[in-house]
Image (cartoon, rainbow, N blue to C red; front, side, top):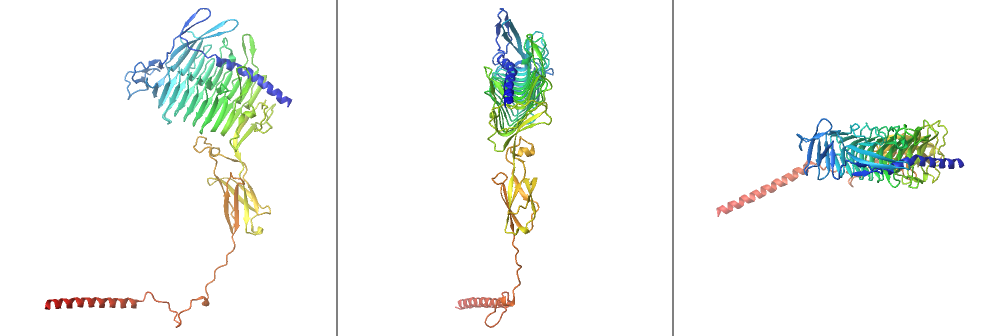
Length: 638
């Protein structure tokens, strides 16, 4: 117990040390003044994208009130020559702020400058910073996607020397919506520049500042590429991010700090999807794949504020991987809610990355977390993230730490009390540690216990933490109306899913009229059988039934109950009594005739009756005819 407390305290300390640089980074986002002056009196004049301005591939659009049409110019830019409503690759509607991409191939950029001043006790660090992007806007923008489109920042270092270059694919300082028609043909690939070699440089595929990001009904790839400070596929500051009805791939590149950088190397990182000082990230009925690259930090999905959460719902699939080429490698860091969805977060591992900053040496630790459940408040007090699984499958994986004085590898690191999956009666938490792990301390307590102690594992092999769904169908066979000697010694019962055998069990005689059935551990939801988490019925319970494989003769079978009912299936085998064969009637059983002794049955088809009726009808007809003739003769004789 004393050892556990020591480990808990140690982890708390290292988490604070590991996370402080991230908070520093989050707090020092640059503003965009028109001009600024440092303490030495030097004035920096900034080029700005002004309010309501929109730039596409280096061209300012929306200069008229009409919808504008452009074609690809073959060099990454756009031209209005020969473009029309029937022939265009890019259009812009200034009234709605809608950019339509129709087979666009764009790479030319526009930029806006910033000035950022950092001060310490010794000196002031001015930062000339430029945001550079293929599509840049300072107003609410909707990007409508038709066909396949590519937006790729290929700009090399400009003539002017900037301390920092933020080289993005799309950069919007307001709300951004990216939408398609919901078909696979609506595709957009967005890449930042990979030639970013300034000291304080970000490289983001889709960057949104001061607004919300919405992605819907589209196939989107957002890629941040190699840089020196921060690479991210999607980065949202001061707003929410929502992905609906879409297939999205989010990638980030390698981050390799400059040795002479004034910015501490420990601040640098490669991130997939980030929400900073904003709101929730929601993934709704979508498939999202996230890959973070190498850097001091590698984090797949990172929600900085503990008040916000990552919500995965409505048959979504989220798969996240963080690189082992990092000192801190986290699959997901942030509060998490899962509702009818599948989440898989993996850290490939971690390694020590040592560095010197300000004459002080840092490093020695390595952290590999599939899910990192901790952050801290403004006073540097550790607080934990919440994990709530309404219904869904969750799997966190962490790999080994290849070097470092202190190594921490956890599939799930957090407080058990903050892990809630109680709303699903079939949910089960499992902790699996691979064999031959060195110096391993495994979970021995029930994962559902309200235990406030941190669960930490020091080990050098992969480990898995998962929330899955299992139950054990049972049942009873009851024999009715027979002699026990007539019964078979055993009865094989098949468990079926839509008439397809899943497994079978054999009930054997136990010298009673009721034999027990146990079908072993089985899956609960359809997606566990089909592997399809996106299907409309993915999270419906599997409709199990049973069938008797070797039904004995002279027994009738009836089934009641179900796999999920109390007591399970109830099968009755009712013995069928032998029936005596019927005997032919004897003479004494024959019906007697009339009093004359005539036993001949009446001849209902006798021809004599028909002839008599015919003769009567002819006679009546003749009489009528004769009467009529006689009457006429008397009339004329008068």
